[in-house]
Amino acid sequence: MNSSLIIFTIIGMAVVTYIPRMLPFVMFRGRELPPFFQGVLQNVPFATLGALIFPAVLLINEGNLLFGVAGAAAAFIIAFLGANVIIVVIGSIVVLSIYSFFI
Image (cartoon, rainbow, N blue to C red):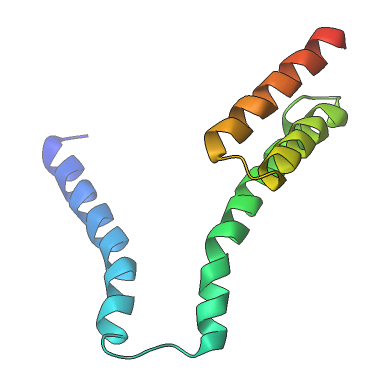
């Protein structure tokens, strides 16, 4: 691949990434969305995160579904108790380390 093709590819990817982010700001400038749409858009990050994480919970350890479920349960419980994200991640790692030591 020559360098000009790489540069054009990078510029093209930047444009394609920038346009969907810029369009809502241009189209809705000065307007407010209805409350229903605001509520839907506020939940998009959580739904996306769940869709990214859930398959990994099921496939983290081949042949041992309980391993992923134990880690997810530990993360859920720690997060439910109000811990920040770093504590949730470290707590899940500790639980899975203890789990793998005994199994």
